[in-house]
Amino acid sequence: MKLICDTQKLMEVCLNIQRCVPGRSVIPHLEGFLIKTLSDTAIEISGFDLDLGITTTFETTVTEPGSIVLNAKTFCDILRNLEGETVTVDCDEKNICTIRSGELDYTLIGLSADDYPELPTITEGTRIPVSQRLLKDMIKQTIFAVSMDDSKTVHRGVKFELEAGQLRLVALDGFRLAIRSEFLQYDGEPMTFVVPAKALAEIIKFMGDDDEFIELFKGRRHIIFEIGGYSIISRLLEGVFLDYRTAIPTAKSATVRINTAALIRCIESSAPMITERTKSPTRFIFDEDTVKISAVTSIGTFNGKVPCSVDGKRTEIGFNNRFLLEALRSCEGDEVLIQLNGPKAPGIILPTEGESFLYLILPVMLKG
Image 1 (cartoon, rainbow, N blue to C red):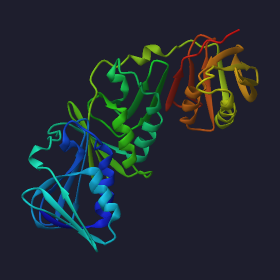
Image 2: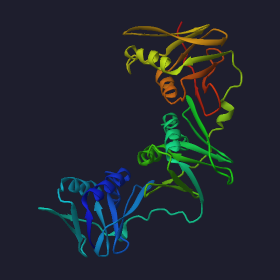
Image 3: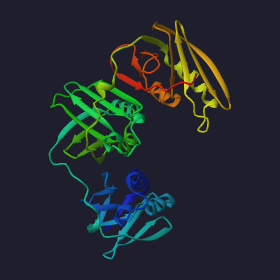
Image 4: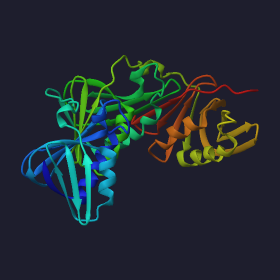
């Protein structure tokens, strides 16, 4: 195999694909890029860790067809050091690869492409077009609530629910629940599937902040995200996802309307009193037109208050300040509604209008 590539383009592609290449693996081939020629003017580069795979093709000059596996970290380190505008990659039948650019010359020992694990493919499935900006925002606004507990693998992902005209993303970890919904031009059969949070964290790095559409191609056990010339394939998580609807209480004793940014600032101000060694719930007292916020730990105290509108009973309740902050930072709009039903019931954060998001947080018992 022999090819001549634009150095910067090759480095950009390899750095993107390196995101799914494990640094160490019991399968040496997985530590590398699979590089193969497709025609006289195109090559394909892939990376795979058995759960997540990334593939792309791009134009280059191919003088000899072939394929090889090159260690991803070493190859990227080499590309970073090259100063020439183009790089020549020349691999012989013994998988010894010569890399030349400008005045620099490297020799890198590769592996046979024949032994590279086959990436999953989807031959039959459902294509789902969606705005990349919208999907990126929805993932960011739910992924923080994914469980880190190994006991139930399916909860280590974000659940996608598709039905006529709507896309809903759901994540939960036993202490909180995050739901994000948006209208979507989809008229296919209703479906649900769970994508690992680890995969989504990498996928959103490929998404831009514009409304250009990307495609999801959902198969039986895998899903492909086609974004900007990259095909990113992830396995889907299997198992029974918790029926989260039954966890959302319908009763409420108070509804609070409050400025989101002001509440965030006040909770953030309590942070110096709450460290890993001095974990303590933040106390909230919602009463008439004010919420009083306090934290008492072994290193000191904090007291603050934020104006708000309380419709209902006075409520004193404790929350994990990090859980509450992560939910509030994901809310859209200047104000939010907080529904309460006493100190032992979950707090629910909602938009002032519509149903685009719902965040549920379990309370923490207060001392005294």
